[in-house]
Length: 527
Image 1 (cartoon, rainbow, N blue to C red):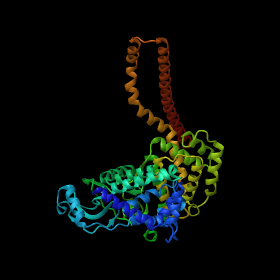
Image 2 (cartoon, rainbow, N blue to C red; image 1 turned 90 degrees about the vertical axis):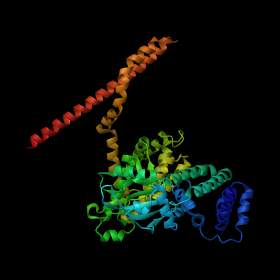
Image 3 (cartoon, rainbow, N blue to C red; image 1 turned 30 degrees about the vertical axis):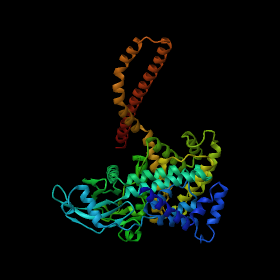
Image 4 (tube, one colour; image 1 turned 45 degrees about the vertical axis):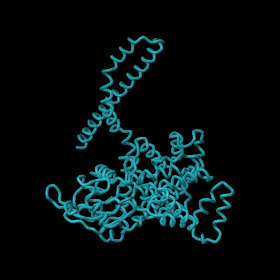
C-alpha cells in the first residue's frame, strides 16, 4: 500500500514537473544527448513564456508545504544556484490553511493527558497563525502562585512525519538522478542539499528543541536590553505542543505605524545589526530564521522600541574556531586588507593550497571594492555574495555547511536594514563591534579566562607527573636512551609552558598594578 502511495505521489510530481516546464529547466543541463533531445520534444506545444525561476517557484508552491520548505532552504544556497533562481525562491512563503481546531485541541489533550479547559483559563479555538509545520493559538494560563498570564500555544500539524519521510525519499531519489546525469551534478551536491533539508525539517518537528533554543537565546540576550524573547513554560512543553509567554508587538514590516508611535527607526536598524553580530560572534548561537514574519517591535512603555523575536525552530551555531576565523575575515574586509582575506582562505584549507595569494586577492578586491563607502540603499549584499560565490567556484572554494545559515541570516538582516533605514551603513556600523570583539579575544581578559579554564586540568596533571615518570622508567624497554631523551624533551617543553604561563600571569598582575598606580598619580596631579 505504501509503495502505491509513493508511486501516486511520484506520478503527481512528474505531472507538475511537466505542467510547469521544469523538465526543460532540469534536463537541459544533463550531459546525455538523448536526454537533451527528450527535453526539446517535451517542450513542444507548451506555454513556457514565464521565466524559469518563476515557473520553479510556482511548481514548488503547487507541490505543497514540504516542497515550499525545501525551496526556502534551497534559496539560501546561493553558492549552488543561478542568481535569478535564488532570488525567486527567496519569495516563497508558507501559505498553508490552518487545520481544524478540534484536531489542535485533541493534540494538546493527548500531549498533557488533561482536558484543555482544565489546563487553560481560556483557549481561543481560532488560530492566529498557521504555517507548514505548526499553528499558534492564544489563551490564558493560571500559574502556580495563582496569577493568570497570557500565553501562546504552538501545536504541531498532525501526520507530518509520514508525509515528510515520503517526500524526502522521493527527493533523495531525484537528487541521485541529478548527481549522476547532470553536468553540474557534482558541483551542486544535490544529495548534501537534501540531507541538510532533512536535518532542518526533523529539528523543526521536535517543538521541545525549539523551546530549548528559545531558552538559550533568552539567557544569552539578558542584559543587552535590545530584544525580548518569550519565556517557555516548561510544565507544558511537549514534542508536539509548547506553551510560551504571549508577546505583544507591532510587526517589523509596519514601518509607518512604528514611526507614528515614536520609535527611533534609524536606531532600530542599528540595533538589529548589533543583535546579529552579538549573537554570532559573542555567543556563537544565533536566530537563523529572521524574516519579517518572525520579528516584532514592542510599544509597551517599559520595553519601548525593543525587538521581539519569535519562532526558534532554526538556529545556527558556530565553534570558537569559526567565530575567530569569521571575525578576522570581516575585520580584514572592513579594513580592505584583501591580501589577509586571501591568506585566511588558504590557511583554513577552504581553497587548494597551491592557490596563488595575489590572484585570489585581486579577485576578492574586484568584488568588494566597488561597494565600500556607499549607503545600504546603494549596496546589494545579495549581489556581493553572488559575486563572491562566482569567485569561489573559480578558485574551487569549499563552502562550509555551518556557514550556510549565517549567509541566510545576513541576507535577512540586509533586507530588514533596507526597509527600516536605507541610509544605514552596514560596514561602519559593524566595524567597531568586530574590532572590539577581536581585542577581547587577544587581550588580558581573554588570557585570564583561558588560564582559569585550564587551571583544573594542570592542577590534576602536575601532581601525577613524578609518579608517571617513575612508573615509565621502571618498565624495561628497548631503546631506553632514545625514549628517555624524548621524555626529557617533553618534560622541558612542559616546564617551558608552565614558566610562560607563570610569567604571563605575573606580567598581567604587574601591568594591572602599574595601571592602577598611574591612574592614582594622574588623579593626584590633576587635583
